[in-house]
Length: 91
Image (cartoon, rainbow, N blue to C red; front, side, top):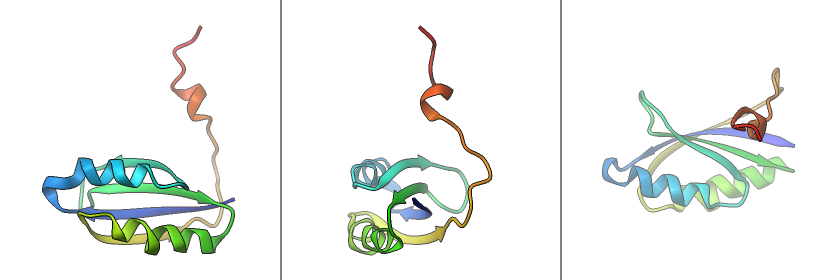
């Protein structure tokens, strides 16, 4: 599994729409709105690095409202967590 963290800048008045469009792209597993110099952070998980390239250049950069992206490939994961368990409210 390959993971990329993508920093995204968007038109100010389109951030929520851009985030939803990005989250709908296959391979994009998470999209967060964040504070600071960037507007959104997206996590991509794919089988190949070529798939990441296709998602970023072929899909993400073409979403209306996206003004800039910076892609960072993850080398190693030093922690793992189960998102479902983290957000479980119990039975």
